[in-house]
Length: 358
Image (cartoon, rainbow, N blue to C red):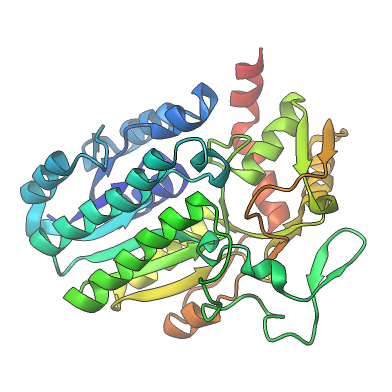
């Protein structure tokens, strides 16, 4: 019996990983206590996704409603499955830099201490397993905002002569920058994952994602950019764009594309790797461009307003450079671009959103 431990298993990336690795023949133990509901309210609850997994995967999926900060229970889980564990995918987190300022203690305990708990039990009970951590581009703080940017009609773009013209690489510094408290807690977790790789020889990887998205995202105002934007377009909820004239750029990676990257690493794991992972030049958009795509899909104008006040630590322009990962794993290719992602989010969630709005 080969077991995959997946934290945040009912969330966007966790649920995609659960479905995928179950299809590869692994038994999946999902750890998820629906903290997303605590952070963002009932609309963000992942209960619907957990129930979907339990129904479709049956006995191949074991759901445990456990908090990753509960070291005693986490230890019991890893002790039970021990050397049968071949993969840990750690997606559980407090994911919003806005929310983190409301409760820095909880943010840090979930993101940093929770990660430490998982690394330590991996070292003790299954040191040969691959350990995949969903980090974030927020570890770079607002350093990307010091890049030479050019304002175009619908977006900001980087100076075409700059070394990051194909996207931001892993050599960008994480020091001397405003991270947001969320960014700081994720930096702590990111460095721990690297250190457990280098110091103890664990097969660890930090995937520093930008906007991770897909149809299973329980998007909210504070987290889940494309999913929440499309939800607003469908049910008519007003949407607010914060700062940078709505021309801030994000690359967006579909959860399925990210899980394929995880799979490549799982098949040939390395030690203490760090990868910037996103839609890159293949899949990116500005806020204004995303709104326009949503309006075309729903065939009506959205209700949206603009605020001059940008979010603290927010990026003006972020496009990931995927070259390092592609060099290490040349079989990996992106499949989804932004219009395809938004169309799928619409198709998969329209009925549920409309029903919930009644």
